[in-house]
Image (tube, rainbow, N blue to C red; front, side):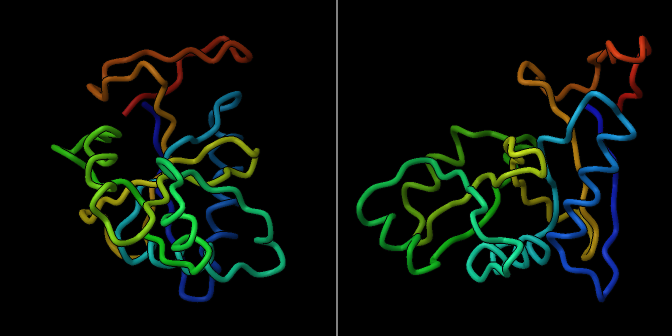
Length: 162
């Protein structure tokens, strides 16, 4: 797992800041791209607002939800959403979040497009302060024990780990 922490200022648009930070992450850890965004509920609500009321730059942002039933489609069209997976025992647990989503009144958006068009998983971590978010690259086979070694084939170096 690799991560970088970023900060928002009061006048920054949250999505623009996230997109610029994703690009910075990629430049820092080429050829890797961030695939997880960790932030608290305050920033997640800004992301929700962006998805519900996108500006001209936000048209066509794709999102990921667990499943779409007819009822969820209706709620999604009305903008009744909540963004971000809850941490379970300080880990991202898709199955536990899926089970919680079954009983949620809102549609749970667990990911959105990254700046590359790939998936950026949204994770709520209320231990982070307002105006702070962390971009992470977590390999698919990562058990989050922070002991993996990730090699950058383009630069023939070991990337720093958290």
